[in-house]
Image 1 (cartoon, rainbow, N blue to C red):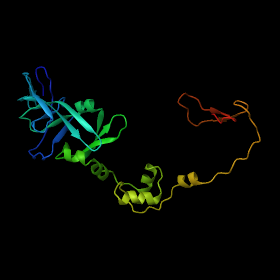
Image 2: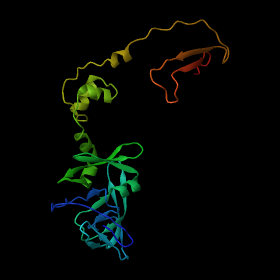
Image 3: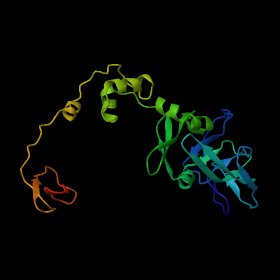
Image 4: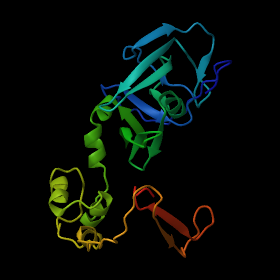
Length: 251
């Protein structure tokens, strides 16, 4: 959609399914403003004094009555929605994906049956939602139940894969995670072979003393050269050298 000066855009195909009692948003990648017909659920608002209209996909111009502000709360974060267009005749509340990203420093990750909202820096999942009637939906209900939504949508995989993903926990710990449904395993067999675990837990022979005595730093330096690397290093070299001070053990 477009206006004379506001240039607000929104596009959405929908059916006549009723909206839930919770505050529900439909993420829209083509909308450049958040749009809603429900002014009651907003945290604040002021009348819109301009002459612009919201133009939807069929070219119809809808009246903008107010400019509102709101927030979305989840167990991990509170998100800001600013300058929401209150349009009484809009059929569905639209969440501008681009504007939400700019306001909250997050990004959306869409999958066939669900989506995640992740922190732009840490990649932590802050919100999640699912699809219904071929539309992605974000509601207060799904936002407040993020841990259950996220854990239940993890793809089921083998215990061996979870063992490697979780940095090699013991079988009893992995069994506890699976029994409490924090991970989803295809098999209930937790006795698997891991070649890395015995190597990491094996004992090493004690090194014999060299008999060298040092009184100050740089009295004695040990050096070793490693190479030839099968792959080029980032700076184009195939060797590296290490120097260890015998007195301070500084490398």
